[in-house]
Length: 537
Image (tube, rainbow, N blue to C red; front, side):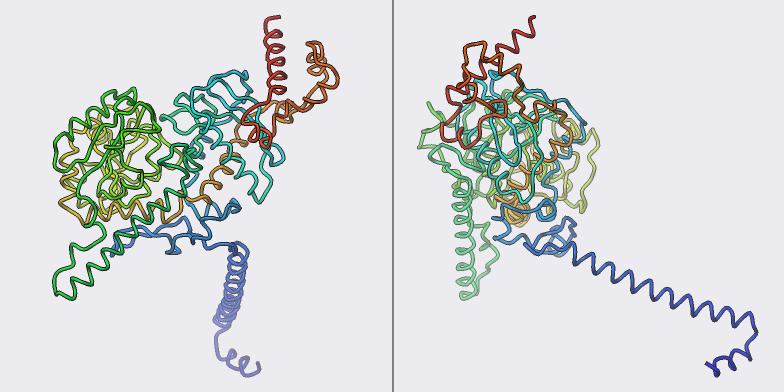
């Protein structure tokens, strides 16, 4: 220290002060950096989820593969995709973008929720309280009962496996093609108040040729794996014979056609000729395996023309058409490593937004684009034609090597040119097909874990904007209602039997009975009459 003082004595005093302050400042900076690094390390340790390996939401473009990959670089593990008890944070990290539809619905703002009459057509009404599911009413419905029972099974599974307490809510949903605003449904048109829920097919479809979604997924995985095996064997044989193996990819072994099956009876209101026009565009074309199914019942269609849902994956290209609204086959087709070709969907389902389309006009005439572009109104109208979606639902056409779906015009006027282009450019077509398989299947968006994550996010987000009456949300059974029911012929013993009817019928009883028992129906009928009588007084 004395030596330092003697050294400082030979330096002008202002300079000494500057040097001392500089040294002091460097020490402070070093300490600040150490503190910041420590805080960052503690934060990373604290926020790290140890229960599963998850893919982060950030994605990086890898030019040497032409694909966007997660920052972790690996898809969720098989174990993670079967984990039904993920926390909210784990769900968001494992399945980035899963809840986009819920965020859009929430952005429309608060709304007042009111229980509707029990006989409202097509409506299932219920409540969730203390992590239990109750049913309040089932309206008259023309849809098969398997659909709403599947939906309730899905919902109950998500509730029972929740690692935390879920909000208490009232809810209503429909399984038909005519949903009500501020309710849950399988699809929606643009710009309305429908809240999307996972399709019932994620649980099961009662048709014998479909069954449960996991079973179909397993069959499709087996088909896709068989192409990988055949391709590997062919590559070995080709190398031994010194011949080229360029055409021995899994893709090359699929049927070199575009496939579609369906009835022409179901078409959206905005395009009554959607399916008939497809048949006309594909008639007698060498690239097409497009056939109309004439069936008296949906359970046992014409077996000479039908394909099992997994057999569609044997084709290089699958054509998708909407029905009156959506078509339930979309989720199944997206499991395949095949190119999906379709007009831009008008009716959105809960993960339809994960589609990354390349417009046929961009694919055929300007495929050198390397980044997504914002389509202006002229470009969108030129591609999409007259569509209810306008310019908002599908504003981007992605570069072909980043796309996972191909959009054609709703009148199918460019279908032939598009299919022929894809078949003539197998490497690009295979890239699009693989992108679909990677984006939706390998990243787990069809998995049970993703489904339960979505259901719980639906419950939570719904609770943040739906405004409930206090007595309705609590399920209270007040004295006036008890007296009124007794006045209509219900004695004290019967009142005790239906005590808590306003809470609803527990899912356990509903599922065993297969609906509402007679005593519950009697109680709700009496109450409905009372409410209507009061309205007319």
